[in-house]
Amino acid sequence: MIKPDAVANGHAGKIIDHIITAGFQIKAMKYIHLTEEQAGAFYEVHKERPFYADLVSFMISGPIFAAILEKDNAVADFRTIIGATDPQKADAGTIRNLYAKSIDANAVHGSDSDENAAIEGSFFFTAAEIF
Ligand code: CMP
Image (tube, rainbow, N blue to C red; front, side):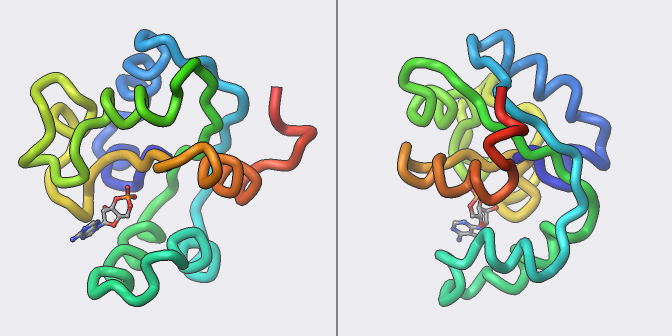
């Protein structure tokens, strides 16, 4: 996902370009304003964490881009190009280093495993929407 902060700040196009330039193919993409129920369900795994309520309200503060990306070693390589969750700790030149301001408003989300990528992809897209 490209999160609401990056969309509102006009960074979505540059982030998509960064992702494509890094060798990822876009298999599906959607521009969507999540409901509270959808954002809560997407981040259900974090339900018991202290930041869950703030995370959900941030994720419904504006529209996002959701995408399915394809590449060899996609999960690990995507995490490399986005940088650490906390932008203050993200390596220079990573998407969060370039475009994020805080751990909440951290510009992008990437799946942390192939299994979660499949679950998160099917959260947003039907089979007919994936190329
Ligand atoms: P994301 O990769 O979307 O996964 C969960 C999100 O929770 C994370 O990025 C952050 O934006 C947000 N978050 C807020 N506080 C924390 C924290 N202490 N640890 C991890 N994630 C956090």
